[in-house]
Length: 142
Image (cartoon, rainbow, N blue to C red; front, side, top):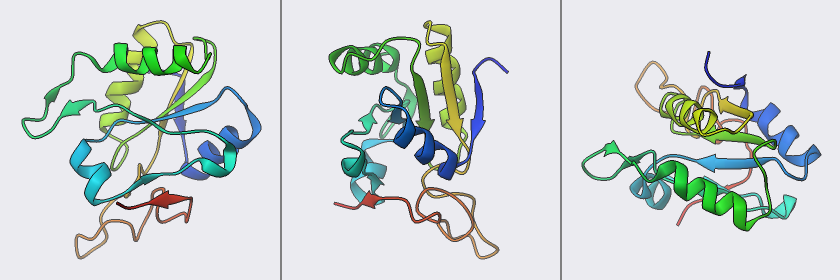
């Protein structure tokens, strides 16, 4: 494993609550944020960093991902020793994003298992088996 490890959505939320410097990075696409929703950290006095790992609609890897996240973290005064959590739809793209941030020198980058929507159920619907929404963590849809 080339990143710090995997955590559940509820463990991520707990660590975001307990650690002032901990930060969530949503690596999904702009379409997903707009049409599916996104995590809201208002009650923690934080904001989710929104940085596409893959650029919609072509879904090519976003070569500006690391610099975007680094710029956001720098503007918040968060250094490379903070706990960083990467989140995607189901916990796959976020692994690649966690690896990229770790390669860039971030020491404690975690993948959020289940992602925002989780795995599909037996009828192919997401959000009913696992994930941020399933765990009833704060989120909003535009």
